[in-house]
Image (cartoon, rainbow, N blue to C red; front, side):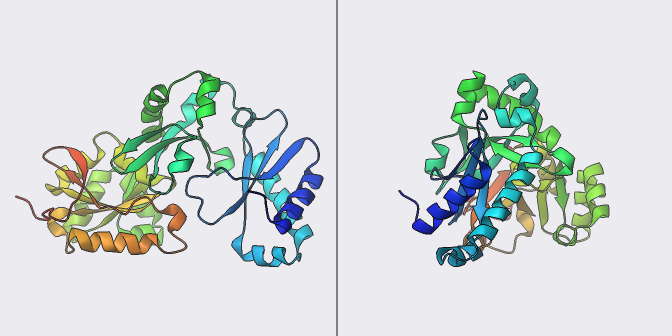
Length: 315
């Protein structure tokens, strides 16, 4: 579909500023969790990986009237150069698989609504979610992610299964699990983080004995932290401390909330209603992971989708 006239004017001026060495265009192919966004892609000649920039919704109305186009182009050029400076050459060029494979990780993403985007990338179904794969870079302390595409696998001559095995080894190493009380998580209590990273089970046991009945589970970076529920043995260790099933409430792609089943004061339907209401908030939509409630069955040692007849109290 052709861009609107105002957007095409913006793209043309952006292209003029970047020069013939670059290609500037509106991104029409769906991107994971891109909700109501206008995205511009910039690719430098000779590079396979472009950089995406988002037009801020608050500026669109002014731009439609022709106001602020030059200022927005200057801003976009600055943002592009800033993002580009943080990415290493091999990540931009997309070569040297042997050098990049140590930075391949997995993440959990929402499946519903992302079907068209998933058609362009390798992914694995997990319950009603999708496991996808990223290259992660941490230049200067900043963390950048680039989704791995089907074309990447063709260039690297590797299979999805090989990528998955590599990601299984890398992700727990690069994203150490972090479990906090809601108060410590919201308050960004560094002492609590250090305590949890040093001895997660001890932290969990101590605060559970103090009456805390819900915990936030993520990774040390807080990005794509919901994927820690895939780590081998992690939910099993938590269930062992509680001697109970573990309710898993998907707060976002970045974190989940854990509640021992024996301490839950809500029914599954009430939990589900809370999740759906949260996922409808404008600020939450693009971060939403799932509308389902999950539970880790401590006897069967597996994660399941909780149904309405799930009993919250066990022997």
